Image 1 (cartoon, rainbow, N blue to C red):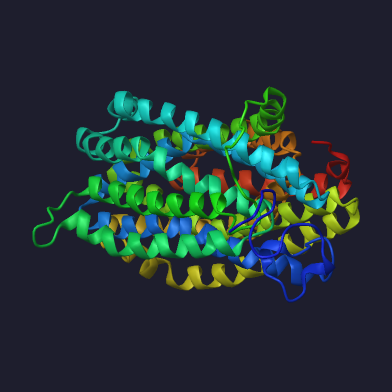
Image 2: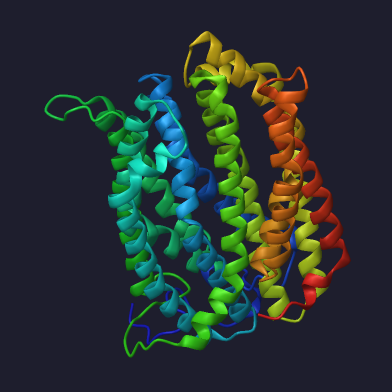
Length: 471
């Protein structure tokens, strides 16, 4: 594209007539129907988020054929990948908030400038994660007190995932920048291509075929690195050539300490929030370890299923956050609030339907991954308990993402801090030891924590203080 910079591809930036008849990359999301705008931005984001966990979920189906130790190793390693990734996620959140406000305020130059700074610090962070993977993968797993076979399987998976984060991060960066600018369909198309590649490669690299040797859990990790690396390359190409709303160029680049601090200042609470949640998940797993490998594997399966089911909510929340951020940038705070409530209500209704399906077919769902009777029994019970949390997750995930999207990241951090460490973790320790619930007490603790979080988010969102947040 022969675009001189700023907003590229498909007709420039600006507001231009409400966007009817135009691509979503140049549509004005601050005008028109709330429901139409929410669906227009949310459905590709929901698909993109669901696809981000579809690959790992399919991997777990294939890894399940290798046995409970492989499931447990991959599950725990996935949590560790999340833990060391929270810094990148925080930077991503800060960038989203500033870009969406800039687009809403018609400040094209600032939006592209933010993208430049994010690109460089994202590369630096990914190199740090690769070093951690090379040096400390096995040691991180040994700290969990796992059985030797679980450590061996997990370390093989973890090392490749962390080293491959250099290429994988490009997809997340491109996805965040495009979505925050209002272009949700381009990253969705890239994600679809990446997942099709992932689905084709996964069984081939895990089990082998012909001249391709079976690599076990290492094959699952390598599949993710390769497919997301290709997606990352496509994302960068789209940004550099101006085929999406933002056009990224490093021409005349210079570090902008003030802008980087703006990104980091918004991102720090999101980093802490992510670290709190992932650390708590690891601690909960540590509570489950004494109940045996089957219980650890069941919990690992539930965590993967949870993420798969919650990702559409994250997509809905991110869409609401982008719309709210752009509406705040356009000085329309009431429209921003209505968008958040609408998104939360729609996702809650969808989760009710999902919960009915889970109640009747929990065992069949678990058998897709593994058919060992003990594991199926534990995991199916875990899944039915989780239905209570599903019914409030529209408020937890959607409103949290909406607050993050407008830059009010301190409240999600404080809410997570108080409910995880004040309610969920203590109950996860106490209930299995003081009641007849046993390991089920851990899952009930998680449910109770989610219910309390839902009440806090709904109360704070209704109060409206977030509408006055400056970024």
